Amino acid sequence: MAGCGPAEMTYTIFDGSTTMTITGRFTTVGEVLAANGITLGPKDIVTPGVAAAAEPEIPITLDRATTVIVIDLDGVATHVTQEVTIGGFLDEIDLEIPPGARVLADGQPVSPESMDQIPLPAQIVFDPYKTLIITEGEDRRSWRTTALTVGEALLEAGITVGALDTIIPPPETILPPRLDIEIKRAAPYVVHADGRTVEIAAGSANVAEILTANGIVLGALDYTRPPAGSTVRPGDMIEVVRVTESIEVEDIALPFETVYEAAPDLEIDTIVPAGAGSPGILQQRTRVRYENGVEVSRAPDGEIVAVAPVNAVIRYGTNIVMRTIDTPSGPVEYWRKVNMRVTSYTATSAGKKPGEPGYGITASGVQAGTGVVAVDPTVVPFKTYVYVPGYGVAFAGDTGGGIKGRFIDLGYDEDEYQSWRGYVDVYFLGPPPAPDKIRWILP
Image 1: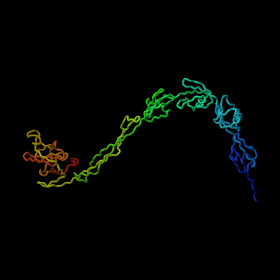
Image 2: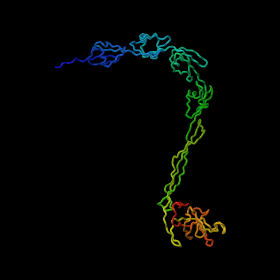
Image 3: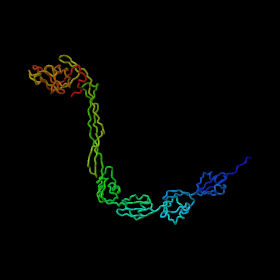
């Protein structure tokens, strides 16, 4: 039968309020602590000692040392001690209270007589007396105090400070050994703002600071009279001008245009609507400025096209179809038929008398007379031939100041003159001219 090793033992450790156990077999107390990962500070006490034999039936007790921070005029020092009262600790480190200083234990003042009974705090502060020079207007006095801050020192000195009075430096300032303190009492002012006139007080003469001290906030556009950066005297009036702006939007109709598209699939003089137009909307913005609710100005603030107009589209035919018409002289081909207003004239009725320069000479240079007609060259291609039923084939060789649009004036010799009035179909004889010489959409 194989031999058995020594049985493992259980050891108990008390570390303050914490109880720990560890199982094993150890020779000394130090081995037990090391196995449990416990480290000791320089003034920690172990009972039994770390070199003592480890006995399972005897608990191991740790008495931890306390860390104390001491602050005085010389600086900050950290100490470790087993003492439990302030008095015992000060005796241990051989530290005397500076004459005239007070002692603060974790921020609370303690008397020298009670230090042997007060538990040791984490921080001890020696706060010596400070000398203050307090100035208020023409009054100037000295004050000796152990207060920590300006506010505490003034309270200790019996000086009441109003909410709007100014203290320099501020009440929360920590007191050094010597400090000058100035008190500026709030002065009265009158403020007119938001439809009300009120009396206020402030410790500053600056307009902006007076308003801020009294909780009167200026908006981004607001201004004051006098200006915010200026100074005023007690009793002066400060006016706050509230400024707001609004944007007014006006919708203006944008007219649409009518565009024409050439349509090779449609015969000439055929007009077909291809798309109805619709007006757009132009939004014009105006910035309106109000001061204390009253309009004071208007200024343009830009414009945008909210809805773009849609153009109307009309397709016009560009397909030329040659056709034939029978005339007393035989059939002729034409490429366009246009109904036109008709009149007639002779060389004499054209405005010049026989013998005058240019008498009987047309715009094309040929002699006026039967077979020559006057036309608008933008409608009937100039120097081409047309056919007029009841008149015959004619040369478009003349123009005139009154011949505009769909208007044809039939020329006659003096002895052949016939009067024409009304409307007649005019046939444009072939061949058709080049496309850039054709007015596709007639007036």
